[in-house]
Image (cartoon, rainbow, N blue to C red; front, side):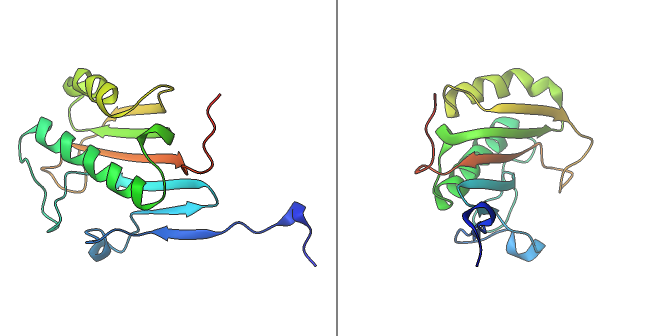
Amino acid sequence: MMSNKHKKMEISQIKITPDTYAPFRLAQGHRVGDLLFISGQTAIDDDGKLIGLGDFDAQAKKTFENLEKVLKAGGSSFKNLVKVTILLRDMANFEKIVELRGRYFCEPYPADTIMEVSSLFSKDALIEIEAIAVSDNAAIWQ
């Protein structure tokens, strides 16, 4: 007999349709109890193609849209983000990220790490965002 102290936590894969990450053998994310762990989202369209080549604004918009899509599929939303990691190919876009955080995220803003990297999954990708959130039914902000 298992005591409540050692209760197992339910884990489920977060799935979207179409799943553009399936060919890469990775999950969009996983839900562990009421926590969501979201894979890095980029500016991939429903056909699996990177959009906005050379256009940071177009790629950032699509990346935030993709992040929202996976959060919803996992039973959460931007308002329940607790941590994001934003990878940029050029830190000159930092001020744009601050503006986008104000557009898509709300108070209390998630904890955040922003870093510049020399490359992402594609040499043409300019931004990637991974996230941790809580489910809508578990979130009680104080």
